[in-house]
Image: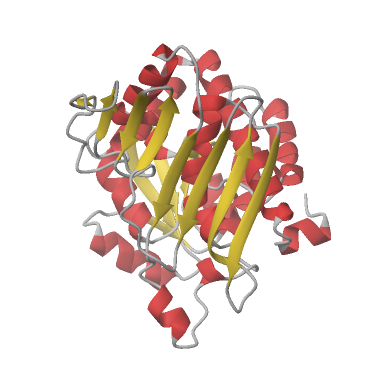
Length: 333
């Protein structure tokens, strides 16, 4: 059993806990929070006795194999670095890091700690319906681009409109629509089409200087991929991938509930998807456990390479729009 500790006490952490409870690999044993009382409250919420810590050094020195991190984006880098240096495997929520400099530093830490694994929790790429899209694209004789949409009105945006400043809508915590939801679409595009030749992001900025929504264009040698992302609007648009007369349709390019293939105009669509699990984190938790337990270095390298490429594309998109985070300015490593 892999003894796992948590950093973060939000809804994502709850969903992850529910997922690992369905898998034999993991034993949840500890939780870190800056406030010990909050850690204890969270233990009650998930109905489990845990060892509670408000000292990160002590937490990382405890008997743990894996650390799961679900904290504001700008905190990921130092927490991941500390956990890897403490000899732990790490699962960190997307986006893993603010910029390529941070990613490079973490890669150097990984190289100095052979046998340690780092996973960016892009849960959707491990789901069967994502794999169905991947297989369908592989069977196309050519690609003609795509329009991918993930725009979801944030539960915290009403508070923002009233004058509050939730972390996800600040530069300080590396927030914004591109980082929070656009990362799903960038994972889609890079997984299916590779790294684009050039990128451009056109955002609608909020009062904090970060993007409430925006449109990105990824340019490939023979086609373009358009990404629509947003946290201050709700979209019901489907996403489409093109190959001549054929169209792959996805109900939601971040959640993948339904996937169909229309082979020609006027032809009945073929359903490629299956009923998704009620907890979308189950497949990623299974995949990470498989890699750790089987020492599957090749599979890890594929995921790690994808994570690096996504990090670079996200950064280049953000910088094309002139959005600068504190970690970019101070050269933090």
